Amino acid sequence: MVVRTNTKFSGNYYSAGTTEVRNTTLELAGKAEQVGGTFILADSAATVKPSGQGNVLNIYDGSIVGTGKVDGNLTLGVDPNGGDPFGGMWQPSPVINPGFAGAAQGDPPISGTLTITQSFEMFSYYGTPVCTMLIDVTASGGYDKVAVTGWAHLSGALRLNPSPVYKPMSGTRLDFLTSGSFEGTDFDEATSTYWGSWAEPGSSNPVKPVKWTLTKTASTYSLLAELIVGSGPPGGGS
Image 1 (cartoon, one colour):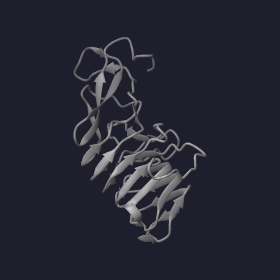
Image 2 (cartoon, rainbow, N blue to C red):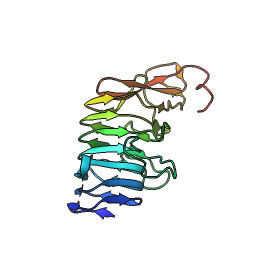
Image 3 (cartoon, rainbow, N blue to C red):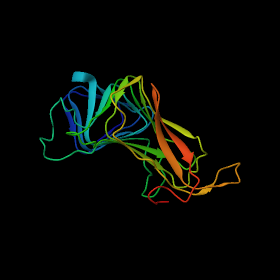
């Protein structure tokens, strides 16, 4: 389904396919549940407005991508207090990925910001951290962001997907998630990415891998680059 004009969906929205909103607003007045496939906010003017009970868009499985706005609350995964829509039949693995993947396989991603005007929650599934926030970094250093006006509760995995030709200087900081406040604990898993080998600009010393470290303030999650001098990344790799 591609939505190009202001649309109000009065019934319950339940989708395992692709929903794409382009330069307009899609209002979901009933339950709003994505149980597979992809929900796409195709541009900065694309808005989904969940106006049913709780004003919440539930991405139980599949993914939400793009550069638009969720005008309401967004949840990723299954709320342990809200019942299991899958009835224990399978384990979901929902993903939030701001911006866009390349148009064709192998193309570089396009970075962007996905905005949530109320709260954002990432849930575990019976104690398993199945949700993923995927942050792409382009060759020129542009990176994906999630901007939450209200509060955020995080559970699940953080994955960084940098372009293989991006070479950050030591101390580079990617402020990839902002929120009015954070509740609960940090991500259950955060991938530190090691790759590359080059000389840092302005330095005569050869520098080997890059390590990304997760840092946090009261309103911002960041990834901080550290260039490691040595024989290589822990556990091998490139």
